[in-house]
Amino acid sequence: MTPPPAESVAAMIRPAPVQKDSKVNRDLLRVMEGTSLGYWVLLHIAVFFMLAAGGVWIYQIYKGLGIAGYAHPVFWGAYIVTFVFWVGIAHAGTLISAILYLFRAKWRNAINRSAEAMTVFAVLTAAQFLGIHVGRIWKSYFILPYPNQRALWVNFKSPLLWDTFAITTYATISILFLFVGLIPDLAIARDRAKGWRKILYGTLSMGWQGTSKQWKSHNRTVLHLSGLATPLVLSVHSVVSWDFAMAIVPGWHATIFAPYFVAGAIFSGFAMVLTMMIPVRRIFGLEEYITDYHFENMSRFILLTSLIVGYAYVAEYFIAWYSGVEPEQTSFWLRAFGPYWMSTWTMIICNAVVPQILWFKKARTHVPTLFVVSVLINIGMWFERYVIIISGLSREYDPAVWGIYTPSWPELIIVAGSFGFFCQFFLIFLKLFPVVAIAEVKELEIHAKAHGAEGH
Amino acid sequence: MPTLLAVFEEPDHIAAAARRLIDRGYDKIETYTPAPFPEVDDVVVPKPSPVRLFTLIGGLLGVVTGYALTLWMANNWPIMLGGKPFSSIPPYTIIAFELTILFGGVLTVLGLFLVSGLPRVKLDPAYSARFSGEEFGLVVECQERDVPEIDGLMRDNHATEVSVVQA
Image (cartoon, rainbow over all chains, first blue to last red; front, side, top):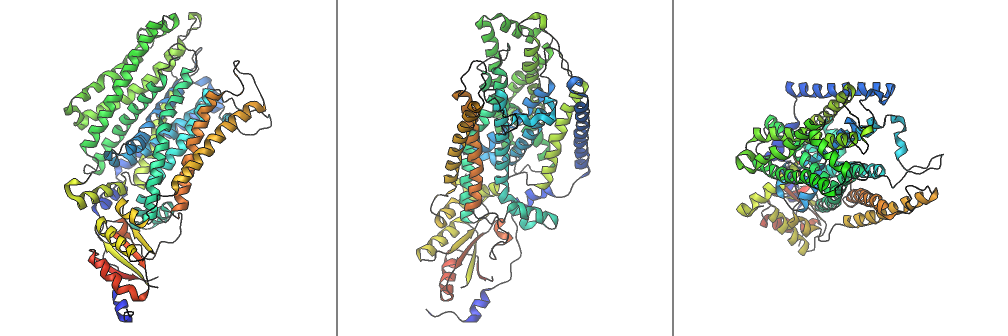
């Protein structure tokens, strides 16, 4: 065959055609554009709470932990309660991303990105509380096994050390998970952005082009990260629960703690995803991508985990009675009818009773109902940790050393500030990164288009 | 050597075109797809991604590090705690487990970067924003004399346009 004449090759070089962008790109990238007044108001409120808490924390570092409401024998207070609360919230993201990925539950595609982002922010928020709680923050690095002048090593038999390793691993893996998932979407944003955003997305997408080799390694990476994150997510809250279960405090020393905490974490995490995503969907008009079907599936998860949590509440009481151990029985009796009865009943009603409404399809598909239920669950789950930690510590073996703990105002401000800290990150994330995984949604759409009704 | 770029609208079409190119012996091909499509990716890169090796190495490294770290430190300055042995395997298993996940995960992502050639500063000249839209690009490097044949082959497989890429 003879080579073609030079003109024919030249004729084939055409100017780039007018870009016809896909609807998915336009719809989902639009979320990042512009900021309304409402957005700024919300961001300012969040930052205000965060700064207020930061100020109080500085004051606490100066004055010492005495300004917290700690009273003998309760020296784990609202800070640890809130730490466990945020670690729990962090569990939904990895569950949705990793476990549902392994189960090939395709409905996760619309919500996985926001849940992964919430995971990262919730872990960061939780990690703050370890620093706040230890008091002498400037010595908090003592927990790390680093070679030091004292030639001392950390105690690896302590659950607190396990916690350090579990939380740092979880933070690292969830950041990697979020970032790996973001790379193709950042490339989409890079191809369409201008100015400083182009530089930002260009840098972060690292030259992603969507070649077969890249997609293949990307798929493999997501699969393996899911495989690694699945046991991790179950281990993290188990380890957090062992912070309590390894101690011999009545009400803490129970083998049910690990599954009980993990179910509670998934429960609260899904509730938090609903609490955040219901307003986001409405404000940014994402009804086409995050449908009632997604919310309904999440509420099924909430119902299931609510039943597990409710079962754990009952099982704890049964074991306390069945064990015949008097301090255990007293602890549980006083949990329901002692000084902390209000917290206990808040927890039982919010976590075990209210979610039962989700048995009805009407409730599962009625978004305002879901929103109210999810907020109540968040409140209930904070009180669950409050009840476990405070009512356990305040009523140990010897009635002579019983005491009462009430959170002080600095603690309450710092707890409120943690919500500001979390929301601030989430609000900034909404405007900087695609909140729905664009490439994954597109994958489903293109498949559906190419294969008609048999699409997945 | 000219580089030809064909644009497709459906994953099946680009997969068929890529398969026929490979059958004809054109193996310098590259695809740009807006999302992962196994039917396309398995044609162009038939072998499983070597990223899996990285996970294995990372995981093994992690579990060894976890046990080595804890056992060595506990015996380097032995302190009796609660009458438990210095080398207590059950609690150290938790550390080893977490490090298995940590090292495995970090090395998996490192593997992703190495295998897929990230990060890179410049994008391919054939790449354009349309391939992060909804279109599929198939790039093939060939001899000048093969251009008409490939052009025909692409069009037979429903390519919407075929052009020569200028470097």
